[in-house]
Image (cartoon, rainbow, N blue to C red; front, side):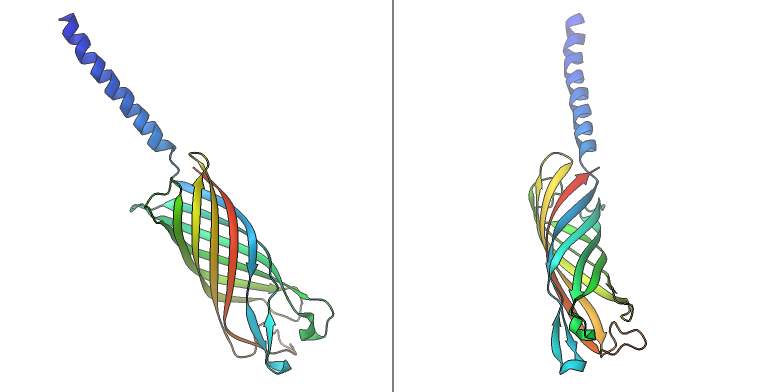
Length: 211
């Protein structure tokens, strides 16, 4: 009788231990993640109607970004994404020798989809979102502007540990400007900037922490 009880207890103990290990492992997988990025952004053209429709190209420069991702019921990830670049407009627009500083921010809601369907392993992914672009010139006579925009990204993730990952992304932005000449102008603005859309491209490397 003692032998029979012992034979029954051994498998039961192993099952309980295995179940506990499985639950602990599952609980340690990240259900959400915050990522901080650094990189560079380029691109973006307008038309200067006061100067024979000359093309105005925004200055390229460093960019910083952050995202918050969380898991949806179907296994995909939702994402809130923010990116900022310190760019510039040419000072010649208002007869200045120095450039006019211009902050460009993107705030988008969207998501990420992994090619292999897993968010906790190495692999590539697509990301994207819809939201707004905020332009803030440093010059008082230029107004700030808000426009609708979207982004699309191609990235790859390397898991450094169960909670930490390295991400690399190429992200493109499209902003709907739809201006026939009054963009950035604030009342007595003497320049006329026109544009239909603004396209920018960004390369980012980020460190992600899951929780």
